[in-house]
Length: 458
Image (cartoon, rainbow, N blue to C red):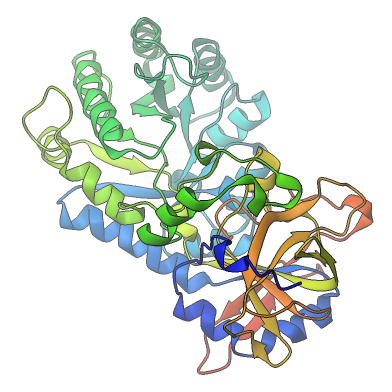
C-alpha cells in the first residue's frame, strides 16, 4: 500500500488539542468500540462550558449587554441542553420537538428563541405558553401569531421581526423594508397581545463586516420602532461564527496542492465547496471583531452604538460553542490495496460525517489509533476511507489520507472536532445499522469517566 510518490499527498492535520489527545492515549476508546460494536461519538461538556464563557467574556469586555443562545440544530445531544440549563444560557430551536427537548432538560421558556420559517400552529402555541421569544419570518406568520395570542393565551406574544438582508436579496429568510413597515403597524394595532422586542436576521457566510453593518441597521430599526411605542430593545445577529480547525499554513498549502488524483476514483472537489477549515478570526474572537467594527455609514463601533441606544445583543452560535467538544470514532473492518493506495472500510457509513452529503468533504484528518496506541512513523501510507454499506458513493473520506502506518482491522480512526454539525445532522440507520452512540466523557482526575448521553428509560 505504500506509494513511492506518497510524500506528495497533501495533508491537513487538525490543530493539536490536549483534551482530545488525552482521550486518544487513555486506552478507553478501544474498550468503548468493543462495548458498542460500532462507531460512536464522544463528547466533552467542559469544552462547551469554556466556549460559552468566552462568548460571554467578549460581551463583557466590550461593555455590551448580550445573551448567548445555543443553536440546537448543530448537535442533538442532550448534554448540551443540560449545560445550557446549568449556566442559564439560551437555546435557539426551530421545531416543536427541539423546543420540548430544551424544556425537558431544564431550559426555561424565557431563555428560548424560536427561529425557522413558516412555523406550525403547534410550535407557535407551545412557544406562547412557555413565554419563548419568537423570530417572525413573514407577515402571514405574524398574523397567525397575533390571532393565537388574542384567543388562546393569557400572556403576550414575545417576538422579533426578521429582516431580509439587503446584501442577500435572494435569501428565503426575512422580510423586506416595506413588509417590516407593515409588520410594525400590525404590532402597534395588536396592542397588549404582542410584545415586539426587536429585530433579527439570518446572514449566510462568516465575514464579520457584513454582520456588523446589518446589526447597525437593526439598531436604527429599533429606534424607529420605539417611536411607534414598541419595546424594540434587542437585536439578534444569528450565528455564522467560524471554527478554526487547522492552521493557516496547512490550510493554504492543502488548497494549493490538492488535485483529483489525490482522491479515490479521481473525485473532483472545488476549493469553494469546502468549509473554510482555517479562519483567522473565529469563535468568540469573531464576536469581539464584530463589536469593535464601525457599521457602514456610522462613526462609532457597534458596541458603542448598542450601549448608547440601550440595545441588547443576541447571538445564536452552534458550531462555535461545540469547538473541541467532541469527536467521531470508527473501527477498521478491512483494508485492500488499489493502485498504490489503500481502501479502508470502517464499521459505519458516511452518514455520520455530514459534509460528504453536501457534495463536499470533511477535511481534518483522522488519527489512527492502534490497540498499542496512536500510530506514529516516518512512512506515508495513503488510504481513502469507505463506509460499510453497499453504495459505491459511501466514502467517509474520498481523499487519500497520508497515514503514518498501514491501517489494520481492529484499529480505530478518530475524526477530530466533529461535534459541530458533523456527527448527527444526517445520520440514518441504513442497512439497519444502529445509530452511533454518544458518550459523554467527564473529567475526573487522570482517567476520563464515561456515561451515555441519553440514559435508557426505567
